[in-house]
Structures are given as C-alpha cells and as structure tokens.
Length: 111
Image (cartoon, rainbow, N blue to C red; front, side, top):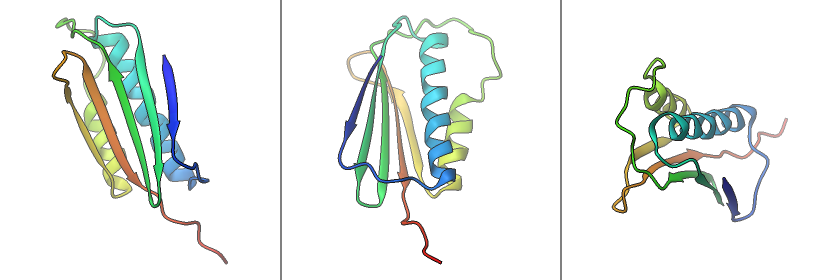
C-alpha cells in the first residue's frame, strides 16, 4: 500500500477524523474481499475546508461472493453524509476500482 498526503494537513474534528479512518478502512477491506489486486493506493488531500480521500486498486474485480454483510459502500456513504460529505465509488477506465470521499472540514470552534 502506498499512502500520499497532499496539501497542508490541519487538525480534524474527532467526528471527521473517525469517519475518515473508517472510510479508508472499509475501502481497503473491499480491496481484500473483492479485488484480484493485493495493493492499493491511498491519497489524503487537504484543501481549505475539505478533506479528500481517494483509495484506488488496480483490479480486476474477482466477481466472487466474499461474504460479509454487503453494507460497506452504504456505510461509507452514511458516514460521509452525516458530515455533509459525499462518496463516489466505481470502476476506473483501466479496470481498477476507486473510492473517493469528500468531507467538509470546519474550523474548530473557539470558546
């Protein structure tokens, strides 16, 4: 696995930090369960007000039932939506698979 950080990292609110962790965790679990590839790339992008997560595998999809609850993508979408963010997931033109999450990052409130 290769991890790349882009932009200037900022401290994340706890809810955003946890959601980002779980989204990456679930996307990597999906690579193990559903991809013929055993490697993935993770890009963590920081822009003002936004955290973007991109998880890519080289594929191909195995097409087999890997067990599990089958709620991985739905769970990722729910986590992102709870923060006002979005998830896009699907095959790439080169045959791999990408999960892209965009989460808003609000500045920490001062007392």
